[in-house]
View (cartoon, rainbow, N blue to C red):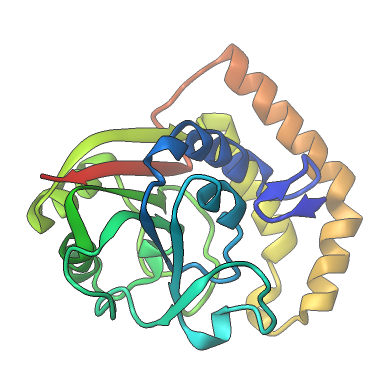
Length: 234
């Protein structure tokens, strides 16, 4: 089933992450100078970012980092609403699938604007349609207009908003995540969760491929699963 974020078609998150990876690769020219990855966790996008950036900085809770880290990563412990990084010292902020878990997204965008240098970019991915997950930290869903207003109020100018997934991809994501994660909130162990994913892998692959074909034939884009905002500090 691959490993995050390079999942295979047998993974429940394939329809969501696959187009995100494609967009991030198209934007890799923006990963320059000092890049701060907010909510980095285990830094799954490190290889994509570090190939372009001079310095890679991971910001998250201490428990989110890998215990043993051999990659060239500068770790910073902190919250997105209060990032312990100096003013105007970052060339690009990368924040993927983390803003929806922040209690105060408005404050988080203000902090992003504060640490960015003039002309620096913010690349932020957020969910639009997704089943409940990551409880009790699953707090928000976003729209393009909402993202633009958050960026504008923080002093960032939106350059583009990229759509991730279409109608059937969103349906496939919801169905597959419900199949795999339906008992997660009741305390089911990670080992049992992985067994459930393995058992359902053929069915999930069928769901994913069917959604991909239907989206190719009927490209309805009013029900995307995800958005990626690209904004610049002017």
